[in-house]
Image (tube, rainbow, N blue to C red):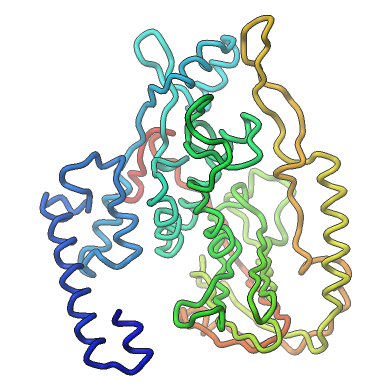
Length: 412
């Protein structure tokens, strides 16, 4: 109400709306902080099942002086075992070899004489329909993008990988397997899709405008190249397509050095005619990191680059270079087994912004953005094709935590 009132020039209504909003914020904060533990968990609910710190930090409900400690305490949350019937039946119909394989990966936990699957808080999802988006966005926006990537790329129950290994081609309604109750084609858990384009790749609607009048380019990277090496996304708007792509360059041939190498990061992005952009670079990993920006002097043939990239990606998908296996049930032996079988879904493809047809693009002289980079300032950008080069970007090992069902003592 306050926002609309401001837009239509109703100052008195705006002030009343802000006063009500402030009162609601204070009441929610009082309720969620009354346990005195600064966890922002609902006092009468199960902390692992209720949105609390992630949603409240994202929405700024947590008072400013409490945000760091609430975020810190959030990392003490752990996963938990899952006693679902379908998962029990699945585990009981595995060979000892496959049970040992899943147990070694931390996907199975001993309970009495048997094994159980479990939710992972930090290598999977312990969140439902409301908290998924806020968990990922809160982590990425507050300097823990690598932990958001860790959640989204986790394996085992309550992950996208778990769905795909059971032959899913659409999202399920639940994180667990369901043969007769929950849908296998349902967007309830699909909030990560928006996070993938806005945070992993780095293009989203700028919060200060409506109707996609201005877009924010804010790419963020993992700590280690073992997690992710490139990403891209395109956001369609009434003004045209805004696109972004980034990739690590000069990666060592020895992948064991992906946790420690110094590399370059190349970012390219496009703002359509009549569009506006804001460039926000990620926090530098080293005081030696430099940033330079340049613009294409003549707009290259993007239609050719897109069509060429599309054809190459289709060829890769036909070669089934995506997800490598799935579980199949043998009705004769009455056992599940791991079927090694490449899939089209999950096939990695590079962005058209890095296609070889753009190699002869004429660029302007580079503008040194290192000071802007260091000051963490946003830069307005006019329509065109741009490239940012970050040098001396330091890779490092990802945090380990205390296991798949554990927490992250490195941060609390």
